Length: 446
Image: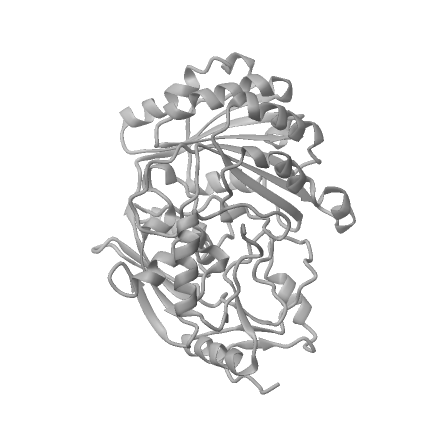
């Protein structure tokens, strides 16, 4: 193979650190058994252009990694050059224009923390270490996202290296086809984003949480209430239930009812708390906190307590608007078969508005359910690895689709774009990447 000449780092399979570097580009410790033909860590845009042209010459394909939080390791593909974008983590904040410009490898939590220190805000994701590249491409479920929208709706433009090795800018008025596709294509996007141009917002005056903890024996009552109250929850609240064998990382099997709140006024804050304070099941809770205004660092700490590092993960998800009566028998089976912590189930009351943005992202529903099977030792993979997939498969008749943030498309297929958007995406891909330099998703509905 001809040598690739770049300023960045190149790792071939015969390099002593090849496996360590490739597997190090994954948060999930499950080894998928797939390896790229080459791994490149570019340091400048010219490196990326050269890599694209080299791949075309050598008959290889391209996969991209920003932070490695794809549960399914979508970026590890045979016969490909893996572009690890770790060096593209620079950012700048323009207060006058209320725009941030950032590389794909900056952590969303890092960017949000910097912004909040200046009295600003961006709808970043809930977990530390998740870089904005893959996060924004798949849509971006965010802190304060029910009010500010999908994070990709705050993407004003992108600088992209295309399949023919050109650096272009995409926005609503410039290369609008790429702009549309980049906001929702996720790991199936056919370009390499080197910089995002982001709309930023004033920091909300209040930010914090309200938590009720329940024993698992109250599952039916708690989820009936959550299902019923969902449409009433203000968009200043992200209301979720987390069920695990160790509620709040302290107690036995239980359910954490969490209201994450961002509000601009005292009136908004009071309104955001009302549904929890009036809850008909609150007296069943073994613990009830008042609203706690907290720094974003503490909110991230709470989120990350459910996703420890150096673990193996098997994940799957679904959107639904099914009745509580239809869902609860399945939720009970999930609870009864749930592996040990950090395994957990997430229920999110979403109830989306009608989206006005022109973007590929197109599948969401009233309720989001995700299963995160987590285990420490590789020897437990046969025992726990398919738990999430199996439980979701049993509920498939209640599903209206999945979101790409928690996809397990290497194991189970479900819709993640509308039919019309699949068709439009395929048409743009055919024009922009006719030689299929970039991979699609692991699977998609036929």
